[in-house]
Length: 468
Image 1: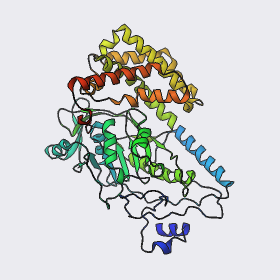
Image 2: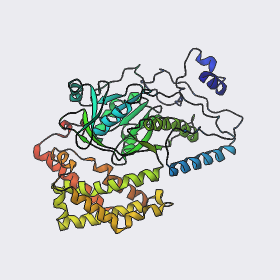
Image 3: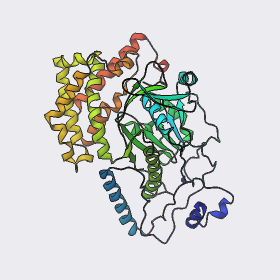
Image 4: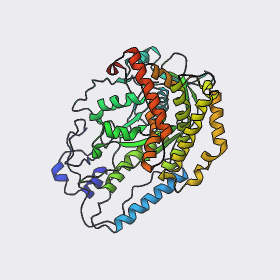
C-alpha cells in the first residue's frame, strides 16, 4: 500500500529504482554532499516538482498527540497560510507522501533526565528497546552491577518501579561510524552542554535531515550553536524538538541507575525547518520535517510517566523563562562570588546587581517579537510578586551551593551561554540594553580562566565527556 502510494506520486521513478525499497523515501537534494551513514547507501533525487499545480498542501493532523490550545491555534494558522499560498502558485509541489518512520529511540547522555526518559520509554511495549549512548565508560560497568535496570524512587527514597534497559553504547571522542551503519532516527539529548558538542560531532555521519533531535536542555540557544558548529549544512541538519521538563529528579544514594522523582510535565515544541535547496523548496522541506517532529512528539506523548504535551513557541517560553531567570541570577552570582545562596541574600552589593540584572532581563523578554501579540501573558513578570517569589526561592536554597561552582573550580565553563548568554543574544537582535548580563558573563569567564591558570591545567586536557 505504501509503495503504491509513492508510485502514484512518482510514476517516473520506478524504472530507475527497480528493486530499491524506499523505506523511508530519500529526499536529499542530489547536489548535497552524500552521507556515509545513510541506511540506503544512495541518494537519488526525490521528484516533488511537477505540473499541474495542486490547490492545497497539508499534512494530516495527529489526533493522538496531546496539544495545548495555543499550539492548536498556531498549527491551524500555519496550515491555512500554507494552503492559501499554494493555491496561487503555479509551480507548487505535489502532496508530500507520508514517510514510514522508525520508532527506535536513542538517548544521548546519562544525567537523571536521560535515565528517567529511558525508564519511561521502556514501559511502552509497542516501542523497540530504548538505547542509551553514553560518553562515560563507568556507566557501562555500573549497568551490570546495578541489575541492568533503571530504578525510580519517590522523594522519600521509597522504591516505585524498576525497568530493564539495554547496556549503553559507548561513544568516545574517536568514535567512527562505519559506512553501513544506519541513520539515528530519533535522538533525545540530555547531557552537559560541553559534552553535547563532541558527542554529536562524533555521531554526525549518522545524523541528517531524517533525524529528529530532541533537546532536553534547561537553557536555550543550544540548537543555534549546534547548527553553527556541528551541522553547518542547512539542507542536512536534523529536525529539532525543544523541551522543558518540570519533573524534579535527583540521584538516589550512590547508585548511577537509581533516581528520585517528583512528577511533573514535559513540554515539547516542534521547531519548523527553515531551509531550502534548488530541489526542495521551503514549504516542502517544512512539511517533511513536520512529519518527523510530530512523530517524535507522538512517541514521547505515549509514555505516560513523561506526561508530555506539544505546545507553541510562546507557551514553551512562558514555561521555561521563570527557571531560566532564576538560574541567570542565583547560579551566576553564586559562581562569581564562590559562595552559598544564603550569602547572596545578605550581601547588599550582590543584591543590587541581582535587581539590575532582573530588571534588564525582564525588559529583554518584553521586547522579544514572540510576545508582541501576547503582552498580557507577560504581566506576571512586571508584578512585584514575581520579584518577591525569586527572592523567596533564593532564601529556600539555604546554605546550598550552585552546581556551577564545582565546574568553575575545575576550570570548566558552566552553561552560562545558554542562560545569560541567550538573553544577551536576544537583546542584540532587538537592540536593547544587556550590559548587566554581559558583565556577569565576563566576570564568570574570567573566574574560570583564573582557575585554569591556578591549577595549570591545559584546556585540551579538561574532560568534556561527563554528566552532572
